[in-house]
Image 1: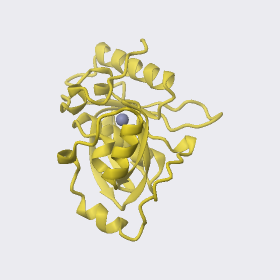
Image 2 (image 1 turned 60 degrees about the vertical axis):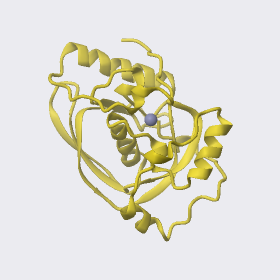
Image 3 (image 1 turned 60 degrees about the horizontal axis):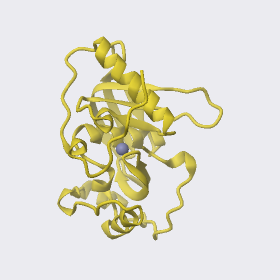
Image 4 (image 1 turned 135 degrees about the vertical axis):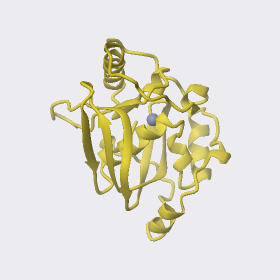
Length: 203
Ligand code: ZN
């Protein structure tokens, strides 16, 4: 178990689709512990295997806050089996140091995955909660999709990335999400004030 170096935006590793895990072996369990150690060391809410250089379908999340006990959740070979509703909020990512931008997400999501013992479970994230958004954010990493691909305003995203010395949005990667766009029509995009409450960050 160790703290790994986090792969930063610009690396091809973050854009590569990850492979299914064929067996939850000791090696995979070590990867899970490395992900957790690295996520906690960086005060992240979630971390996906490609972010530590392993293109395997594994991610971890912990949305506990403050004095709550730690609550690590491990997802191996996850499948999103239901998604509905829409929400928008500022997200960041440990691969994008200190850059937060407004992104579109489903409000409710149901995911099926294996836990660290290889046992299947089903989990729901509801109402645009941090858990619902974190599941979508980390799941995307396994398909080489990054949070900026869901940005509501690419000009704002570019400005924020530039401020942090990061490469601009790859415009050809921005996702067409008519279903979310329509649902979000009535919710104004944030005017650009990037104040992110500490407990609202998705990594
Ligand atoms: Zn991320």
